[in-house]
Amino acid sequence: MKIKNNIAVSDNGFVFNPGSGESFTVNPVGLVMLNMLRKGLSQSKIVATIIEEYNIDASSVERDLNDFKEMMRQYRLMQHDDE
Image 1 (tube, helix red, strand yellow):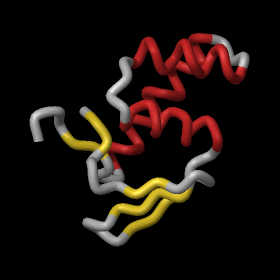
Image 2 (tube, one colour):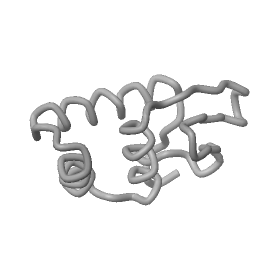
Image 3 (tube, one colour):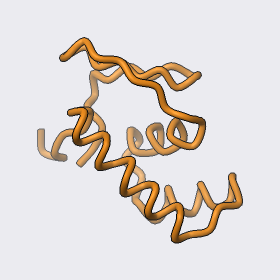
Image 4 (cartoon, helix red, strand yellow):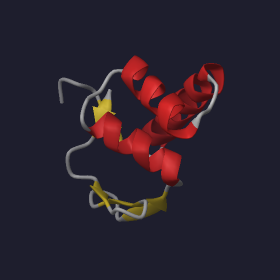
């Protein structure tokens, strides 16, 4: 799964889905996760970066990233890699 290409993301964490007209906001860590997911980085790379930048333990980062990805799926901001 990856973030849909048409999703607009501002530098302050405002996320807009032009397909549905819905908008969302993410916190600074969520913005880092979102941008790394958009680049197609692996889960392990994202986790390592968050740990390094924010000094958060690995289990919390893994859990939060999985929760974040699930939320993105629920809001239809992600698509299968082959779409």
